[in-house]
Length: 126
Image (cartoon, rainbow, N blue to C red; front, side):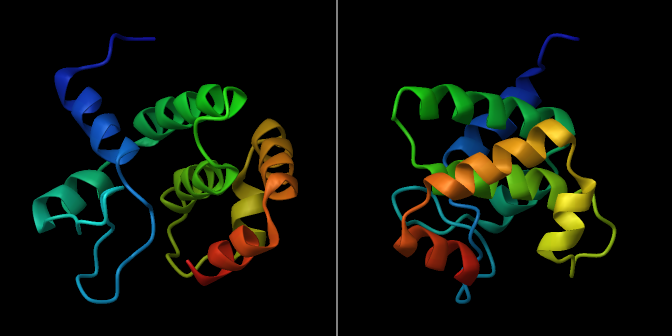
């Protein structure tokens, strides 16, 4: 594996602050503090590749082990990691599951099982 570049570190940093839920009013994601992404930030986030998203998910897994993030956040990161790989942006949950590795599919199910009912509803709405 090659060393991360300054650009990819900045992408991961931006993604770590993302909520992965599109806002209807700006058509962007938001920062964790509620501020909408600027158009350039959203473009940077959407330019993330599989390496950046895999690195981000690895960080989320470590934070989950320490109860520092919610399973819902990790589910959003994992599903986005696969959503961007599908050419059809109207992909369904079935399409996402089919694209996942066996390991990620098992992790996805484990994360879903850890969601509260309110978090499951939030996931469906996002």
